[in-house]
Amino acid sequence: MKKIAVFVDVQNIYYTTRQAYGRQFDYRKLWDRLNAAGQVVTAIAYATHRSDEKQYRFQNALRSIGFDVKLKPYIRRSDGSAKGDWDVGITIDVMETARDVDTVVLLSGDGDFDLLLEKIRADYDVSTEVYGVPELTANSLIKSTDVFHRIEDDLLL
Image 1 (cartoon, rainbow, N blue to C red):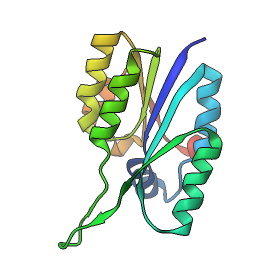
Image 2 (cartoon, rainbow, N blue to C red; image 1 turned 90 degrees about the vertical axis):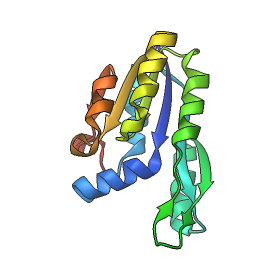
Image 3 (cartoon, helix red, strand yellow; image 1 turned 30 degrees about the vertical axis):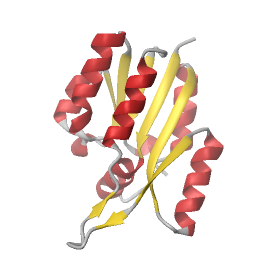
Image 4 (tube, helix red, strand yellow; image 1 turned 120 degrees about the vertical axis):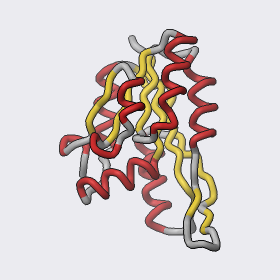
């Protein structure tokens, strides 16, 4: 059975599905789809920590599905911008996991991950899949993966 590792850039998926569709992503449907394709041996969702009851419920829902939830503090800068970037953390976890699985699945539209996918394919002969909102996913990321899954109605609540 194919071993699958899943890494979710929660903020990216939340904002891109909201912008493109005004809807939320359905993590349960994703989980069912991935389990039908193989054995999910690692599943990590990267999110920001806010003292918000709605966020706690969402994070607990992810845990009940089977995700390990990693949290980073949400920082509001003095200029009004926000920071909660997990790119380095995701990259480290993918690099540490890729040698032990057959497929790495990344949920993000962030083009910064294109080099990561190319690197793990070359070094570990692992297949890669990306789930993203088509019009909000970097072309470089789409081109760097073996399979690009379009997030559309079938994966939305």
